[in-house]
Amino acid sequence: MLPSWLTQRGGESSADAMHAVLGTPLRAPLMSDQEEALFACGCFWGAEKGFWRLPGVVSTAVGYAGGERVNPTYQEVCTGTTGHTEVVRVVWSTPAIDFSDLLKLFWECHDPTQGNRQGNDTGTQYRSAIYTTTDQQMSLALASKTAYQNALNQQGYGPITTEILADQTFYFAEPYHQQYLAKPGSRPYCSAMPTQAELKEFEGNNYRLPSTVWTAYDWSINHCVLRSDNAPIRLA
Image (cartoon, rainbow, N blue to C red; front, side):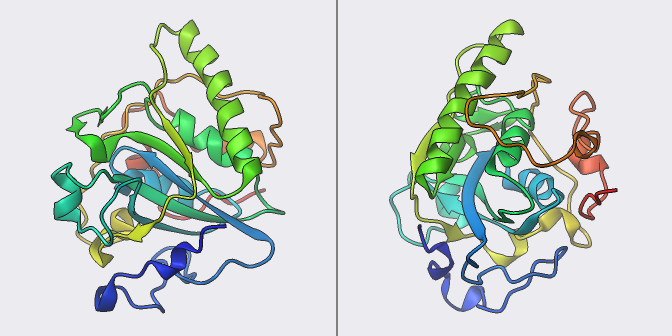
């Protein structure tokens, strides 16, 4: 498993930084019943909020992955020369939520057919990606891609361009990007373009969250993540 908490950005990001909403450490080593993975769905501000609201998610952080430069800055990533994409690192409790649930949110929250673009945002840093940390995660990611491609085909979309790779180094983004949409004075921005195609059953899936959770995500409403509460979704 990739120890992503080791990729710290000097003095800018303290080891004791806490999640602005969940109140959990951003850099704590994984517990025995936790896993992590990286998701890229366009601008990481709205994507992070979508993930931190899921029951069972322990912590989220935004950053950069999939590129070549060590410890890239936001400005460097935006030039497109480092090869990184904007990602959300998600840490979750495996007894509470399955990777399948996270994949459902990932595929449904954006348009994974747009290549190096998501809505009005263009460039390699906005490409769609899943970066796994276990063999089982990789198997589920690939199976879910096949299932979601079938769903997209029925709605007239083209081929999925999502990059799926294992063990990509995660670099924490600058502190002002972390949980950006939950901070005072933040600009309510999200470029994600949900297709309204639904990820249903796929090979190996083990959904744990009840269907009521997904009513909090209405992809028919433009930028529904921005319109939603910052607090995690509570199970009845």
